[in-house]
Length: 479
Ligand SMILES: *Cc1c(COP(=O)(O)O)cnc(C)c1O
Image (cartoon, rainbow, N blue to C red; front, side, top):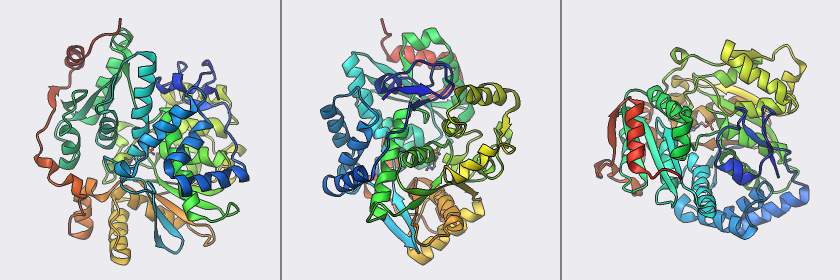
């Protein structure tokens, strides 16, 4: 399998080459040349693999369709090492829980940092270590986080050979729980840098360092952001696992509702559907930052300015643009790299928007690709959390609540189960849970008292030079 760029001007590459690369050199995102098709017989085989051998085997079989430059035995071992009951809490890894009348929750948040990002990041950590060792190379991951991504990356990379993480975060702005999760890590290869500023300052620093190509090359700077194809691919697997658990035979369909921000999670659902997994609808749920809902309702994609990006109680969905969205648009445009380039490289920086509403192909987003969308607000979130607790005795997190709210509006066909992806556990967003329920959510035993653990963090002014000097002091330059 070879990978191409959505903008049509990059060399075709194998999986391991794009694994360590971010954007394609032409500024596009990588996608496989074609989507491997899963036949009825193959789906039966995957069903059996999941039930009899478990999630790791299912992951191995799906990943094998896309990775031809890692020997099968090695890939199998990497999957087995990643998806264990010890790391993810249950043997099913992503168990389904019934909520009401054909509405299900798929638990994706029982990994080390209690958010679904662990599902992909844990695999990425093992893939990076494997590939860097094979090449005799090192990688220094520089990132900016407001919470979930940074902790998932750190827990995935901690103790990994050949990898260091330099994670910037806005000083004093993450929740006490999130700070404790990240700063209590004592691993030598994990560096927390708390920037005296806001999240945008952190992002600006990361951009400035990455734009210094000489520095980037000398210190082998890389990223683990959500446009990485390997992360997306790892996420495809739990759509299969959800489908397999919700159905008994392959002639049944299911729908998914996905709390969305950067469009990474639901894009993996799109890939699974393109492979032939019998998915009826893919419902995109947004919060007040409704860039994506607006597109699927109207055909207009309008990137928001910083001033129009709201700080909400489902903060991991607070985005001004959806960085993975280009992948879907590329498919919608019949994989026309030139047009995708015209929209994303030309139209977007100049006008901040494009509008497909007048084009017949826009209707295909719903008719051919199954996309629907909806939006949820702070009041909806509180009401949904309260209602689920009172009627079902289940406490859901704020992002998942956005999903459940929107799923209920789109769950019309009783014969088609609707699966809502649970993207985090409520303890991560305890303040809003208290606001909704009047009491704090349950805390998993392994996180008891983490706020009291010693912290390992370097506080720094928002200054690119100081961050660079810190990196220089803590790694050996490449020769
Ligand atoms: C990252 C995140 C999301 C958004 O996922 P995307 O892949 O960016 O669409 C939703 N909920 C939680 C809890 C997250 O951490």
